[in-house]
Amino acid sequence: MISISYRDALALQQALVRNKIDSKSQVPSPDLLVLLQHQPVYTAGRRATDNAWLEQETSRLSRANPGAEFVSTLRGGETTFHGPGQLVGYPILDIGMMGISTRRYVDQLLKVISEILTHPALPMPIRTLNPCDDPNLPVGTFVGDVGKKIASIGIQVRRRVTSHGFALNVERKCEAGFQHIVPCGLSNTRLISIESALADLAGEKTAPAPTRAVRVLDMVPATVETFGKRFGRKMCEIGDTTEQGLDPTTLRLLRDFKPASQTG
Image (cartoon, rainbow, N blue to C red):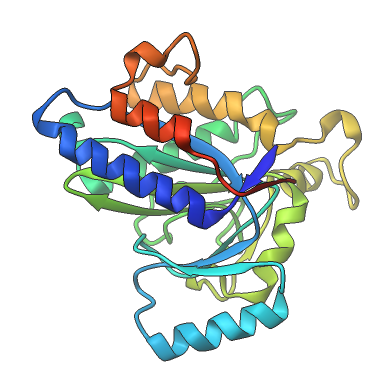
């Protein structure tokens, strides 16, 4: 699966959100779920407003992980890492049309991730803590206890249209990028992956056997299916057979999207 530049994906999100907002008074553009993996990047959420700190952090991380970018964003949350081995989902939804609050939307995303982790696509289910049931838990998906986090959520809502979204750690190789930060501001939490969680469940000390290895691309069908069921959407891959359901602007934006990418 190719890895997409974060800045390119952010520009696409912003354009899709603008179009969805602009089309509210006309023929609404369709809801979208953009799934991808990123080239290595650290992103700071809107809580990071200290310019001096941002400059220092950019400099520090460029030394600690020279292959990664640093991007300041308007999503919720604090600093996190994206990179190969992690499945990132950006839903572009009009939650106003859906009649749900921002809090309800976040709860739904958390349930999507929990349901992905118990999907039959995995060799065994990964049980998680549910922040929807415990308001004392930080936002995110934790395995066993708050010391092990497997997925993160950070969103932006503009005029009831969502952007940014969730990041699910799938392969072990994405874990290393988190070693240089306090991920999401949780000092006593380490980020794990599906691959690591499955190994722990099997009582293994090394990587799972190849027959049980899980890759980012493997998790796409389960993610699409689970998201569609949770949000009551019929999911269609954008292609020759579904383009008639897209408004001209969305179709043009997606057709013209030519990101800087690399295999990872």
